[in-house]
Image (tube, rainbow, N blue to C red; front, top):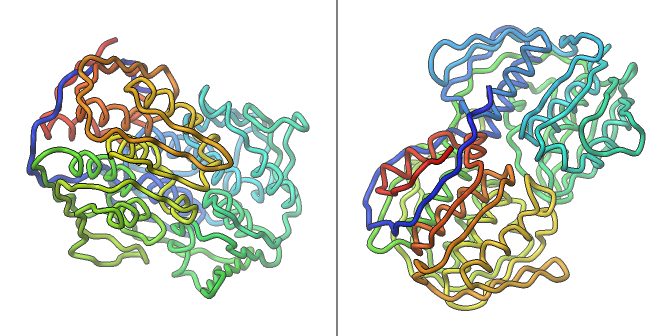
Length: 448
């Protein structure tokens, strides 16, 4: 059920802190665990799953499609897989993805090659605005059809392919599109080949790697993923690590707050997800990883952070794919460093939960920080650590969790008087965010 709507109000500067914490579990891995468990044979165990709105929506959608999922205790689930092509739906059933673009793209990928699926698909007001043109064009190549024709945002009607056949796909920066192709390929005839032109998140491939009859990955200058269709998928035992994207907001706060340090335990440190950390270390951040280990082909460990003096950030386009969700908080950091920071190759930020470029520009303008966006290059003219307790920032209802979280970090570092409408959207990815903020000494008010 959707969380009750509320606004958040804050106007206090945070004090120094020294803490050890855990952050919410990884959303990307949690969603993929349930999807892949559903099409595997026998029972898949998922431990430490994120219980955010996006993940709970994923579970509800799968149950609606005939999948048995049992919750044993907090964060621990059993998924009773029935194998490929086993999902069923009543004709014209409404499948609602809520706010989750990940769920929408991946589940549509999976259903496109599942027999006899004829459903209506939609999301919340934020997701319904996002273009699904690339996804629709890709799934149409597998034989799925979408109506009305030439409409590329939800709500839509989808009919799955009667004869899905594998294809060759050149993958760009979107891990979700790459995963959608992989999932559609699993139940297609013949082989599906994904050529990775640009490196992107690889959680889907990592989960499938134990099934050598299903997937072959060749790494080189360009990674090539081969999916062998209509094969048997073994069940899995998955323990989900902490989310590096959720951790990034706590890291940013620690770096910029006076005399502070933090240890964040058991965070996923997949190479395709740590661009935020690599980038900031390059410009003076005191960040260290320790206790590194691997499970289910995923690296995880602890993150140690201390207050740091940062230089202006120069981010080439290669960082975008490894830190997409962290760009709003990177823009906040840049605004509080003296000098000009430059971010290249970020056009795709305009098609997230909101237009993250223009919305972040509006927030920065309210604290007196100017910025320009031209030819896929975003410049922020940082003022250094400002005291802005004579200013007010208002964030309207956007349905964008990362912008809400970024604005809160800005407010508690500068003392700006902040009001964020519909802050409950943060629960789509980070239900523990406010509890963690409170544990660090942050004072805020919730208003209905």
